[in-house]
Length: 244
Image 1 (tube, one colour):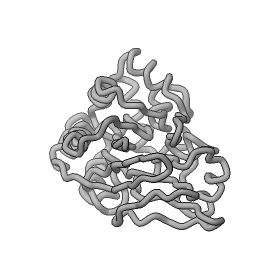
Image 2 (image 1 turned 60 degrees about the vertical axis):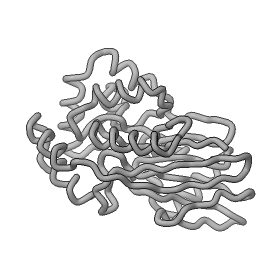
Image 3 (image 1 turned 90 degrees about the vertical axis):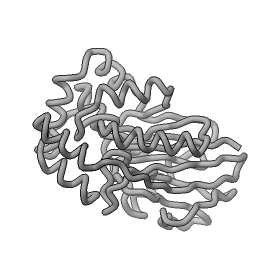
Image 4 (image 1 turned 180 degrees about the vertical axis):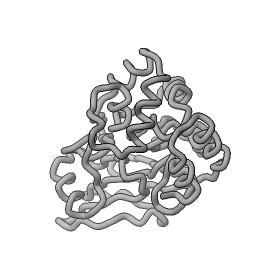
């Protein structure tokens, strides 16, 4: 059985990432994959990129990664997001820019596929309801798709023509004949009312397996102070404490 750590939406939050990596090490994961958005919102884009590259984490490109690399328009972003993108562009080197620009938008393996938003809109579409999930299942050629973007743990299961939401508070059993869209939640900026860093652990064995959705606390206050210290929008510091 292969044990994989699933992370997403780190958003340059190094303390949250380190807390998650510590827990994944304790869980004995064999590899880690990331559903994108390594940068923006917190002050450590360079360090987060270096840490994930050092650990050979397979990551797809998120919309903030693409925007920071200059290959995705920022007109549709909020004012706070545009400010952090400008800040990130100013401090990352050509090495980080090239890395972010070169990330795959969709990464496929034998059992699963990884994307940031959705399979039909890798950088922009949110999968936040069963209608959009059903459309995504129609494009899914593997049993499992790991995705992020919404910053909310959970996902959807399709079985016998019915699409239902996944409860992240219960361990999920992967069953033959079903397909799954699984969101590990956000490491660096959760938006489900729980400020703890979110991740998932997946055990895969042939056409079966299980997924556990996990949380780990970290020093949110120190990250909020660091956001203020470098001059990023204060709202980004405030929302960390409430997980919104």
